[in-house]
Length: 376
Image (cartoon, rainbow, N blue to C red; front, side, top):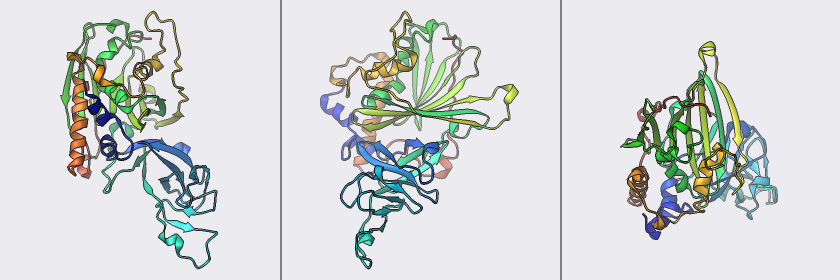
């Protein structure tokens, strides 16, 4: 149980909040390479309670800048992307990807006013079809090079969905493996309501979670990556196991965006063939709208089960009302690491799992695995 004050500490992500300042030390996915073409329409991005616009200029350079024009606040979402940057629709001010003001059409020809304007601009980086953003203080850490970013012999599918609740509810789900035997019982009937044995081993990136379920021959290994990511494997009979990584991105205090990557290796007949990349993009999830099915259990479609569980807790769950048990050790570990990382930032130090040395970041691998489970 957390006090109301502690709950506020770890959930609020807006600028100037303790958790928000800590979370700004990380790279977060905000879009897809396929959706941001040269000189295509700019894309509005919301991250950690702040609004930005994402674009690619005519030279192929990515730009991530504050949404509202530094002149008089018009949204650059309605601007035009040109060879050298993005132009505001209101008075035509032109900014490059670094936030420098290049043109002010209405100002005198000999004016140096534009040279004194620095529009807020931030780092953006592409990897594996995602666009990641960093909006924290300099120097920026390295963007972690997770193993699934570089798997080539198979199919990589990427997408994102919106959850209408606070980021911590989604992050806690990442370390709570016990919910598999209840919430996901319709998908895993042979695991349904069986008492699992769970182990949490703290690692340099977060925690390795091992779950033994009676009747399942092999333990399930998954990984929680600080502050809110998961790396796991799903194996169903008759199918090649697929591997996934999910990033729970704090959109603002009451909304989360989950970016996900699923990689399925080629079968023997196609081994050695090139990577197939598919971008699903953003799924159109609506608050409080879920698909119901007659499954003999919760009557919730598999793709909506996690959303129902976390969104029905409320926008920001009041953890002063909860009652944690022995099976909630992972949740407690997560909260303690968040509080420790907040304290580290307050002391001028890096929070947990910040990479600054290239030799730490050549390729980050995980032994995620799961025994085959029956078909749905």
